[in-house]
Image (cartoon, rainbow, N blue to C red; front, side, top):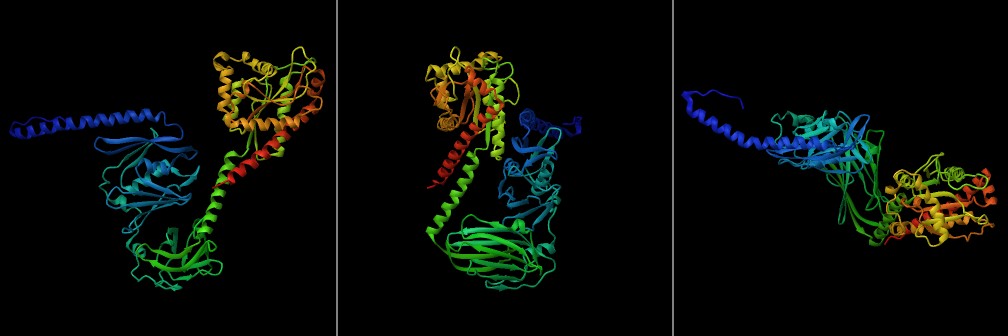
Length: 601
């Protein structure tokens, strides 16, 4: 408050001003503190907003407000804000059908809506009751669909909300924050006049001529310019449906043909236009199957409406014009065939679940782990063959076969060259890149026994035999080469292994099936190691959250097998045998998932 000088001739005025000054300090000091706290809080929160969000700071009245996160995405065009997220933050309701969004507000006595279309440079503002003229606000940038969300550059979104609501919504660029005040509207009412249709245009909204009666055709006095069909809404009622064709412009002559033998009815509006791509509709269930618009040569627009005649017995159909809303309205009454509807709905649910489950469970990424590498050579044969070299070749060949035979499947390698990768990190790579299968490839070795030969396949689990324990101990010994191994693998014991196995029980059956199929492809007549899927506590199988196996391709401690494993052609052959096992597993798995998805009540 500015200082002032006392005037002895006006002592009453001085006393009054002192009282006002005292009241101002008492009232505005806490308000100032609150706003200061909000400012510091927002600054602190902005640091944690992350790249896909910004904060909105709202003042809704004296000492009232809040700060909330608004979702979006940084792009080359700047930050694109999610319009639904921004609407929620401003306490507005919104509905989005994949192309069009309607946002509703009710700050005052009149409820208004803002309609936005992806790719359109205009926002349409109107009241729900239709008692005020529409407004068309030109946007600086058309909304786009980003990750199934309608988005706009944040500055343009703030401008649009400001013009619509008549309240300041401002993007503060230096702080990357939105400030909004949701108190009273701006005293300057000119903001609410932006884009408002003039009186002539408004008269087109509610023409003075009488509404046409229901029937096969209607007529009205032609008006200059084309009427634009903006939207189509289908409202389901207990005994039928009501279709509304929303228009901007004058009432036009209409031809309405009732359903033919195929269940198609036709609505033709003269001197009308619209966007056929946006006005084309299809419905999974209900009386109406589809609505197909066509622009005719004579300047008319025709809508072909396909009805679900097999499931619904149509009793009657009628047309009327709604002058209050400037809508062309079709009403259809029907008798319901309950059994046909039930069958149609069941088929629809099956299709939805199939689509959802196939996408969720589809085997679209395989992680291939070549064991050892870098400073860890793995097992070494009598002729100096190193395990890390053999398994890297087999892993690369296996990836080649998967890419050739399964072009829809991504191949993820834990290592592509002679690099040392910690065991724990291999599983983390599999999880990070969304693997659906994890295959770790190794060679075996036994000290003091050169006669054991043949492949083996392991899954994660407690050691059931001494032989499995020895294999696991050898493969796990690599952790001694890792930094901070004691801390990284703290608590790894048989007890912890049991708990890990239980936690991965959802994948135990799949892992066993995959191991059996792969072992079947690898079987060799010369094997003498008691073929069968085995369990052991391999560290590399500890972290992947998916069906996982470890393949021991053979024994480098056996001279004959070492000769085979070091041969490049044999390595390719082994890789193909593993792929054939995976192919058996995939066919069985996806067939089972599809059958399971079809089992809908």
